[in-house]
Amino acid sequence: MIHMTTADAPHELWEGDVNEAAIEEWKADTTTFDRIRHVSDVTTKPQAASEIAERAQVSEPTARKYLSILAETGRVKVINTESGTRYMRAPQMLAMKRIAAIHREHSKSEIRDSIRDLKTELNSFQKQYDVADVDELTLELEPGDDGWQDITRWQQIEQNLEIAQAALSLYDFDPDDSHAAAARVADTSRVTGSHEYGTLSDDSERSTA
Amino acid sequence: MESSTDIEGKVGPLDETAVEQIRDEFTTLDGLVIEAGFDSLLDPTKLVVRLDDGIGDAESCRFDVRWYQTGYYNFHHTDEQDINFRFDYHPKPDAPKRHFHNPPDAPSEHPQRSCITVTEPRQVTRAVHSLWRRAYETNSLTQLNEAENPP
Image 1 (spheres, each protein chain N blue to C red):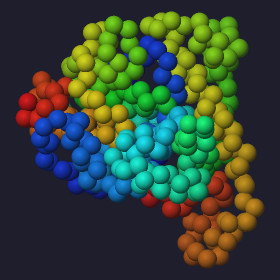
Image 2: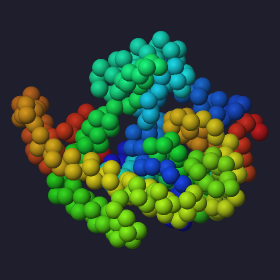
Image 3: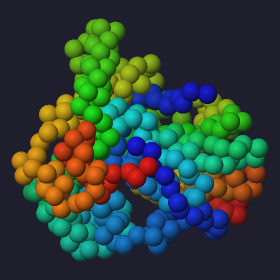
Image 4: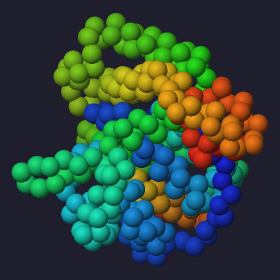
């Protein structure tokens, strides 16, 4: 989970406004496709191609072209409305990335332990506030109240629980027997002995640490 | 000091994808970054970024970063000299949503307006890093929330 880096340090400070410099340097270090991907990956509400284009600092036709490509690969969700096409990130992209990361680093029993701990914490919130779910508590709070940290935590627990439960269910999901296939074509011992990992872990992203 | 988020309104759960972008951005921006990762994969609550040097006498420092699905965020700096400051964006009564908690203590009350106005995770990370980097190179905490360079 900890990623080592070998990048060299840039020492030049910016000139002018730090916000303008942040945008200009991001543009200089990326392609137009990178920027559409960066922006669409954090788009949590439907937006028009023109809005995404503006955020990504690309032209609208370029945005439209790349958003279609990302939609085809399942990374972006397309929503057709009366006022035109809207785009947002696809939930399956988020879920699969997280499940793959968990399969890469955690055993089945670690996932089970985590599910148990998260459920215990959830139950203690329900008892503490005497409400059935987090939405009920949200309605009771005013801005500035204590308790907003707990709402954030509660929502986080629910989301982590769903992901952990899905990661556990899919731990051995391998209809094409890809593990055996990988062991046949690769001559590394790690692949053949990899039953400690979940089947959705992606070797290309495994940390080498 | 324990990492405090100072949340006083609805921010929603952590956005792991945004946090991954921030991790990748930090690691490519500065060779002083020696570690950058989630505190946990099964129950992620924050990104921890460790740097191998710090401002002034500090020999290392750390950013604890949270980015929420609403687009709100906390970037919290701390080091072994106990210098704390935070660039935040979230609802807070009697304060601008985008605000800066001053060093050395980053008190919760009366934060200033933040000089960071960009909104994408990678852009905000670049701005926070630039502002930190200037403080590091000039050995000074006084200009941390000053957008113009030279000020």
